[in-house]
Image 1: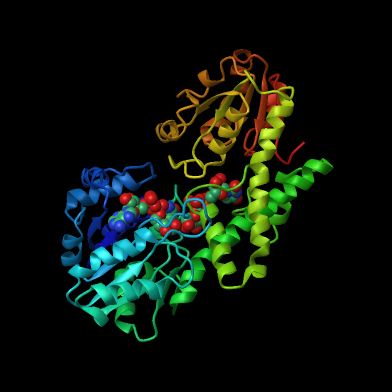
Image 2 (image 1 turned 45 degrees about the vertical axis):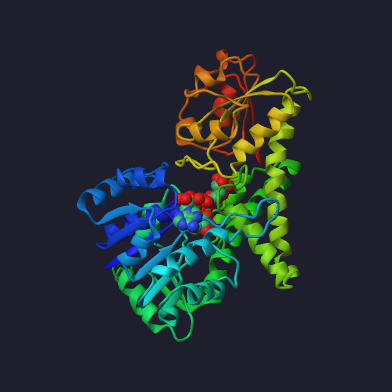
Amino acid sequence: MKMTVIGCGYLGATHAACMAELGHEVLGMDSDIDKVHTLNSGKAPFFERDLDDLLAKHTASGRLRFTASYGEAADFADLHFIGVGTPNQPGTDAYDLTHLFDAARRLAPGLTGPAVIAVKSTVPVGTAPQVAEILREYAPAKDLIEVAWNPEFLRESFAVDDTLRPDRLVLGFKRDHSWAETVLRQAFAKIIESGTPTIVTDWATAELAKGAANSFLATKISFVNAMAEVCEKSGANVAELADILGHDHRIGRHGMRPGLGFGGGCLPKDLAGFITRADELEAGPAVDMLREAAAVNGRRRQRVVDLAREELGGDLSGKRITIWGAAFKPDTDDIRDSPALAVAQALHDLGATVTITDPKALDNARKLHPELDYVEDPIAAVDDADLLLHLTEWHQYSNIDPKRLANRTTSPKVIDARGTLNTDQWREAGWLARALGRP
Ligand SMILES: NC(=O)c1ccc[n+]([C@@H]2O[C@H](COP(=O)([O-])OP(=O)(O)OC[C@H]3O[C@@H](n4cnc5c(N)ncnc54)[C@H](O)[C@@H]3O)[C@@H](O)[C@H]2O)c1
Ligand SMILES: O=c1ccn([C@@H]2O[C@H](COP(=O)(O)OP(=O)(O)O[C@H]3O[C@H](CO)[C@@H](O)[C@H](O)[C@H]3O)[C@@H](O)[C@H]2O)c(=O)[nH]1
């Protein structure tokens, strides 16, 4: 099949490459011409495991290319996925749908015959009819355009695998849109035939499915982090508590790692956007627990700042703090709403000199936070530090021998906010080690 993917960021570039891997002929379209050039050279403009391999393979095989032209995209195929960004509006928690509406409006004039527009971007419930209305107004094919809602559940750092082997497929249609269902079932045939649960539903349920899933994931993380707060007051160990809870198959251990809480381009903004939409729909009380999940998440970041202050005698001015980790989680270079950088910024604002290291995200961090210091090597980064903070759990950090580090600091103090350092080992190596939620 031929298809396009409009918006080739983390989601769209991955989707385009994976659709080519499934055997389709794919044209990716993005308004950012630099991104288009990078993608056409067979490379991702960001770090995502396995993606460069797929991009190189399929730009070479001729099944995948990228353009910045809407006209070319409209002419190329009758199936168009849209995966443009839907951030929060600056200064509010509501979704900014400008890019999505703009994409629909600019694609529409080229749609002269029947076409399926399958939206993957995450949106507030009630968006699909607005996209359909834009297409009806601006596309010459008018009512021959069918809109489908196909929310995406991939995780960055597992994006390729999650796209090719998703837990489920969700396809949302307007009642009379049976052609769109046929087309999408064809596009995803290999995934469906492999036994992936495929749920066909209406637009609103498909839209809500995505916000509800991210709200649940965020709440699960905040639940265990709320337990960490209780552990800190009672002397209990949240890591062991999470293991005990997780063995109950009704609870499950996945997605319940305690620590510094959630960040990234999705969970924080989707939680905020979901709450805002529920308020608009006068369903505010139904999402009060989500407000609390967001509050718990904010308190984890503040807790690390407070602990750092406590360890450094209350006054951070002139203190040197080293941070391991800038990305919002390991195995990505994405720093959107990174908990590590939020803590770094707060400590800098309190007068500390902050040095950060990260295996992949330093270039992005440097652009956003030029006021912080950056060092490539995690070992050299602790030189003359008054305090080390472990804020993103890259596996290489838990393999570093603390004995090699202690003498490089002014005083060996570490706070493990992600729970993956062996604090017993660090203490044996002479460090004063503290961890969130654990004695
Ligand atoms: N990143 C993820 O893991 C993930 C997973 C599931 C869902 N989502 C959702 O997918 C959407 C995209 O997220 P992302 O992380 O890929 O964002 P992103 O910022 O990485 O990518 C968005 C891309 O859209 C392009 N774009 C913006 N306006 C455009 C327009 N009018 N025409 C063409 N291209 C345009 C941008 O240049 C950018 O390359 C969001 O709604 C997000 O919530 C993201
Ligand atoms: O047990 C956990 C799991 C995650 N996190 C943190 O939560 C954030 C999000 O992690 P994760 O969910 O792995 O990453 P994302 O790539 O943001 O993926 C989420 O957001 C995507 C975009 O909507 C969805 O598609 C995915 O299903 C959803 O997991 C990160 O800061 C993690 O450090 C924890 O603190 N504890």
